[in-house]
Length: 377
Image 1 (cartoon, rainbow, N blue to C red):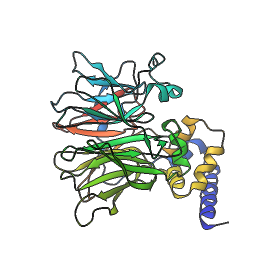
Image 2: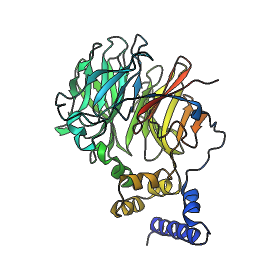
Image 3: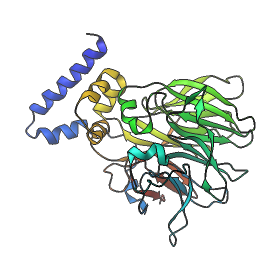
Image 4: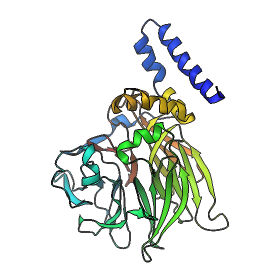
């Protein structure tokens, strides 16, 4: 028995011993598995307001257009919606698939590959075009008027992209940087990707003029959010499984080098830069006992996959059974500047993105039927 297996078995045995030694095993087990508190955090996000998405769910990414209108967000039925204000609410703006006759339910996992599932969104500041990372259909673009988006990248070296996730745009060089989370699993299998310790994620560069796709980095553990620095000298890439924020240098003497900018205490999703050059990262959840075991040994995660657990049970174990929201702000050098939370999940939970705009923080969530808005006092 190798040392990692020994550690895992010992941890499981410890959990069992604790549970059976307590008067209220289930309650105590939930407390034991719950995600830890983070020193210095501010439990303020419960005071956020929400903008309901009537008939829709899963606003993964949020973006404002060059005119300051929006936000726009992609939802689980394949549509991209635009917020028109309190009077008009959300209106349809664009889609990535023309095959939408069956796309009538807010959430239909089995139809995502048909209807499309837009994740990362970014506007080109010069053209006003909206670029879309669709999990199943690849990299797309749609003009300022919206409508049916046009395909740009759907494969690499003859093999289809399975899990296009996020992107950012260098508007000066007309280059798009985007992630493909896995070459093995699609989005609807994201739990299997995490639990198995899959490390087939990739970072790509797409040149708009030449239409050339270049592989910049591979072997990433669930490649997720992407954000360029203010001067476009490097791009930050999120590894959701490891909780690492990687800095991939694009220019200067360090060009091509990759370093760990920060290690976060959870499962980070998207990363977005504010006007000051700082970065907001949304944590899908913090890591509790199970999350740490899963990310430290693939053996434990693969064991969970073999058990007769549905998605809800597996997800509950991974996040510690307690819905919550955690947002982290980093400096350009990876220094932790601020942590905001809704520790009890009273208003926000399972956030996927934080977008700072005009003194407010806008929150997306891949699982919730609303967008959150928080205005610091």
